[in-house]
Image 1 (cartoon, rainbow, N blue to C red):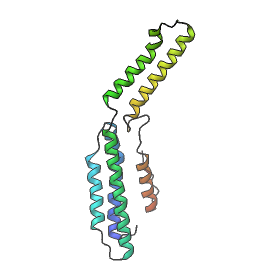
Image 2: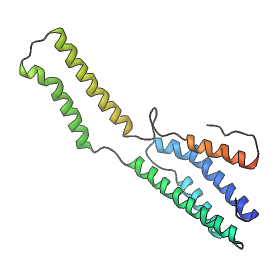
Image 3: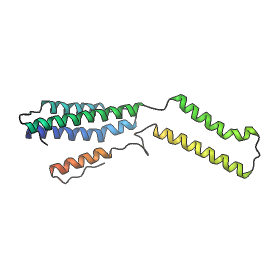
Image 4: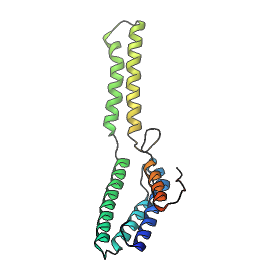
Length: 174
C-alpha cells in the first residue's frame, strides 16, 4: 500500500492474477503431483513489478522493502509446496508397513493360539488398526489430495481481502 499509486495498482493487479492462478490452476495440478508453470511465471511478474517500482520517498522505500520481503516468503512457500508434492514415503517403507502388518496379524496363528471368538475379535481389531494406519499414511503421502489434503482456502481468503482493500463487495468463489 505504500508504493507510488501507479506501482501499487500494477503490483496489486499482478498479485490478484497470481492468487487467481494458484487457486484455479495450481491446486488442481498439485493434486496431480506437479506445480503450475503459470503460477511460477505470475509470481515472477509480481517480483519484476516490485523491483521496478520507484522509491522516491522513505515510506515508498520501506514499502518496497516490505513487499520484497513478503515476496521472498511467497517464493519459499511455493518451493515448500513444490517439495511437498514431489516428496513421498519410500517404497521400502511401504513394503515394511505391509509386511509388518501381515506379520502382526499372522503371529497369533503361527504361535498356535486357540481360535476363540475373543481371539478373533482381537486379531480383527489389530488388522483393522493396521489397515487404517496404512490407508491414512497413503492419504497423507499425497498432501494436496482430498479428503485430508491442503486446500486453496488461503488463496480464496486472499482474494476476499483484495476485494475488501479495494472496497468492493464481490466475494471470491472457491
